[in-house]
Image: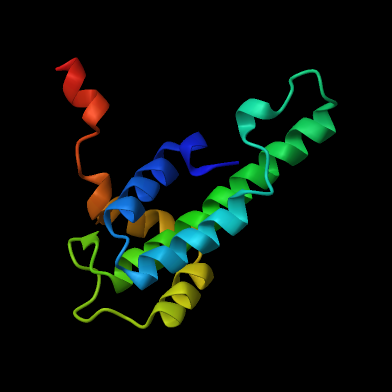
Length: 131
């Protein structure tokens, strides 16, 4: 799978390209790429595969995206890219990763409902063409 296969990961990749000077952002992109590259994107999973293979492939891609998303949020917390600010001071990157990996799924969902990644708030250039 590649970032372009998932809209949220594609927006993160665009953010990475705009911030080539940021070592945390670059490190995060490398980690995300290592997580998702070995996994087939849902569009490549064949409907004629056995149900077990199809479900297993979907599970793997969902798990990879979910893990990547938590690492991306850790990066955003460290680089002050969460709106409104999550904490008064930016945490250390590895501690931030540990935090986002260990919070429960429900707590993570609640957090992502209350807060936004700054690059997610930017208008998609393709959407501007439609207006």
